[in-house]
Image (cartoon, rainbow, N blue to C red; front, side, top):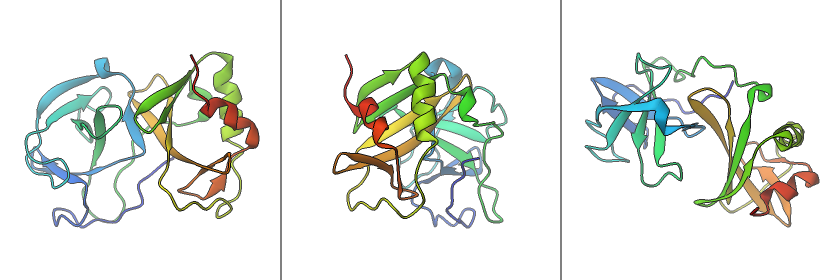
Length: 193
């Protein structure tokens, strides 16, 4: 299960990308994204946030009617929304109760900066996932620049899973683990018609 590794003190505003909504404290979960805007509905506005400012629209995410996770309109996100999870204190923030098994992935979108360059469907999904699962050992792929790509793994659930990817010398890797991906995965990072 993917989880955010930041430790935060509830309400003290120690995290740069946090917000208040309905008297609850939320932090950004950069690793999640909205899969389909028809699975969200507007429920209010941000009450306080250093990153987004006050007043950005807040949306309920299908499957999270208790508002443990919410979506917020974010013009700086390439999907147009950022996902926030409620933080109740005591260490780690909560993670969504979803199985993120790669076997559930039915579509993959690859963005270069803010532009969609590949929408992978059908048999190519399992080919990509198979290569993606073969990431190398940690600390073998170091880069100095920020990630140029984002891979979005989509399932039938309301939340998709977002991975930053970097390129160095025609090789692709996952900067958060400094893990190199197999060379064969490069074909998926070329723009497709």
